[in-house]
Picture 1 (cartoon, one colour):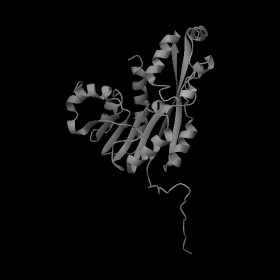
Picture 2 (tube, rainbow, N blue to C red):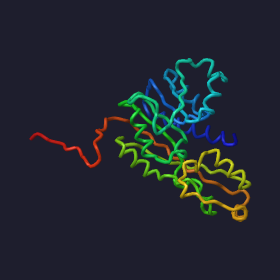
Picture 3 (cartoon, one colour):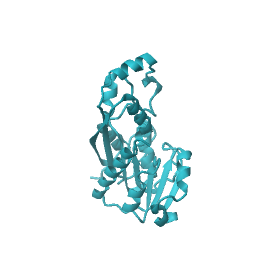
Picture 4 (tube, rainbow, N blue to C red):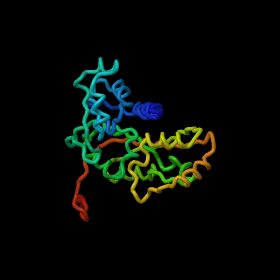
Length: 256
């Protein structure tokens, strides 16, 4: 895959953030595990944990079931599981996951608040989460040329979604990665591999004729750059949230 290095680089960067989190999870969920770029890093950091790799694409998971690496030989078979499932409706019991991890799944997610709520449901009280996605400045060069793209979220909106879901004091920060390309065709091929736009609403899509594409390609200069804004969110589930029907609120009583 042309963008293996991006997934591997982001896996290294995201997991390095865990150095600041004191965590000894029994069960880890890698939600949207894909081709398993984060697997060995997670296994090295938490060698005693059960690693559950979940993805909605069975054809991606199936080839990974057979041991193909040195890691597969020493890693205990019972400490690794594969699950094919939907991120909006995780086939896992509530409060069953001690650490929820997800790297670059969000470009495939059209309803991020629903994803965050489902993440919270499966997390155990006292559990932690860490997920990474692409922020609002990603692919800004393509939009400047006239292309449409996935509507990337702002990091502040991600923080608000986490608070609304019941997480206390979540942390969201960003960094930028700049990619350089010689031609537009290669750039667009890589972007498809990243999944950007996979969750686009049809109303956001712009169909281009061959002539329009040629005109846009002509505006793409050699050695042009492409920006990826990467955000990483992490935090804890430190309290249970009372779920009430719509329109009802909690009333707190104090004894004088």
